[in-house]
Image (spheres, each protein chain N blue to C red):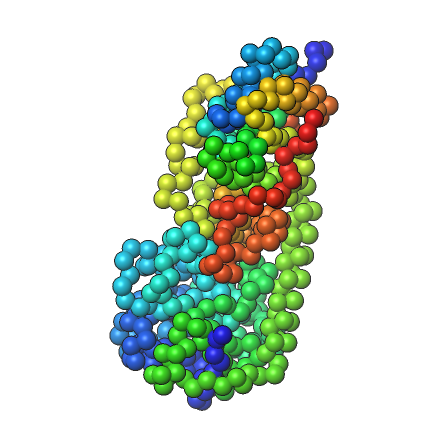
Length: 140
Length: 382
């Protein structure tokens, strides 16, 4: 049987992590092809609806990438994203979904290697966790 | 600092004494209108009414034991566009707390509103009360029993009936308002307490409506604490029971399998104020082929889809501000324990930010602010 290949949906901010992912490509960093990138202007634009829709409809993990604290192009979007992700994680844990499949990571435009390493590590971790049970719920 | 006073009750007619106080607010021009619950002509229930003529205050039900709509929503529509005249509104503790949350989201404009709260013994489901009234267990007999119960904080519903679940587990029996009518600890057939907040104390004293004194029954604090302790115990028991049932998402979906996706919990919720909800938009319109792909992958899918995401997204939008009025429970045609769900999840999330919804309009809701150094949730350096 073929090895389980996790699917990651990544919401990346235009100014930092998306550019960081671009740099990973132009500098020929190697990382697994399991990630599908959605380009947003700011991590603060990520509503929990995007994350949940991805997890329920087939993703095994979600990566949210934004600028480091203090570096947000819009001043505070990443701090707001952090609160939203914290609230979402709190809700899921209270509902008994204790698996940590949502990753929030600050990656700057110059950190191409960090982006590649983050995706590599996430794919490894998700392979150990196995497929996301949320996407299998027939009555979700 | 608020000022305390007492209103004397003549011949055991507590509601009449309170009506007398409300009349003086209108007659002496403290406010130009009062919103207050009144019995329906059929006597089967109560509705909020907006009253300008003091005579119309006769027969209002200050202690209306039902909550057909969330009055926070009513004062939202009353105040959000150009309310120039001063209006008082008699509301339940949870309705006032919802109004505080809506004020933070600019959906209630408190400038010309004076909120009047009354110690809350709890409320009944609307159909329960109608039945009670038909059986002769409602109306004055019920009011009398509730008022007797509040003296010692031992309130029992008429036999065969129970208070709404949300009320049984509500830790806020005493409202925070511009005027608070106090029942707990008082012999309500002789006198009740009044507490006037900063906004009105000067005017009420100058116009001779009340004379202030710091006297209060010695037992009041003890009685209030007892009621809070009883309800907190009930709350914790319900949380525990909920945790036992909802162990993971599958068990949640099993328990909530009779959800008919009517979205009534959302419609009834005072915190869900968006004019256009995301669930009514094209985001949840999918291609026919998409449904088939899901069915392919999962073997079969329940139709209509999107139950889980509805509850999870609604929570992620409102749960930090959930004040636990339980109107979602009352609105659910499948009698699902939605209020317990929202309170249980809300408890956890609100504690993350040490946030108490409905406490103070000066506080900022967790979703609207942040601290630079908090919530170490971003994954560690590789």
